[in-house]
Each structure stands twice: as structure tokens, then as C-alpha cells.
Length: 158
Image 1 (cartoon, rainbow, N blue to C red):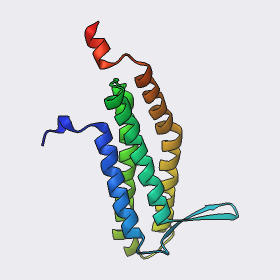
Image 2 (image 1 turned 90 degrees about the horizontal axis):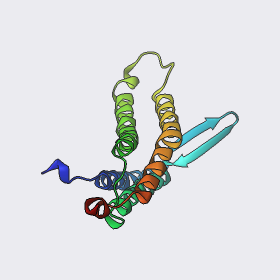
Image 3 (image 1 turned 90 degrees about the vertical axis):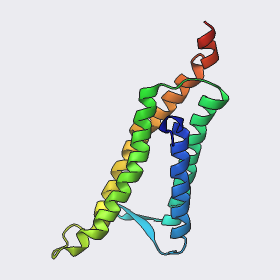
């Protein structure tokens, strides 16, 4: 398989399919949820609903890249695309590494001062903040640059 043929929107759609699979698996466990504690308020979100939101997020980001690259036939800013992709897909991979690490190693300790749920919640909050305040503006700026840039065919003709 030639890696040059894999486009950025293929990566986002692949992760969207993985998240959809996770949503199907998590639907078998209706009591699994993400608990977020902010002062005196607890936010409880079902893992299934969270996976559905992530599925549509990755799907729509891939669709945005696909529209600019294939339909509008425009170029994206390569560095911004790489940064955005590394943050989004890297955070997905990093989250699952933390989950597996927490399940394998943190449950074997004698003293539980810092449980694996706290580690997972800190990871999720950190990734959420990076995605919202870094990756999302980069994605929007990159799409706007791509939309207002000359198309590939116009660049070849001049």
C-alpha cells in the first residue's frame, strides 16, 4: 500500500470509524460514563453519547478537508494540516494509551492515592483544552486559507 495515497481526510474518517466501533461496544455497557466534577457540580456523560459526538466531530473534520481538497480543488497550508492532525489523532491515541496503562499498571499498586479514573479525567481535560484552544483555531484558519487560496488548476495555468 502506498502511503502517499492516504490523504488527511482518510485519517479522520478512519478514526471516525474506530470511534463508531467504540460506540457500539460501549452501548453494551449502559452504566459506563464519564464523570466531570466542577466544584459542587457533577456532569455525568454516557460513554456511548460521548463516542457519538466524537464520531461526528472526526467525520465532519474529514469532510471539511475533503471539501477543500477535492470539491474546491484548493491547497491547504501543509504545516497547519500536520499540526491539527497530530493534535487530534495523537490525542485519540494518547487517551487510549493512558487507559491501557491505567488498567494494566495502576491497579497493581498497594496504595491508591491517585486512581486511574483521576488520571483519565486529567488526560481528557488536558486534551479537551488543547483541542479547543489550539487545534480548532488551526483547523478553521487552515480551511479559510484553503478556501481563499488559488486553486491547483489556476496555479498551474499562471
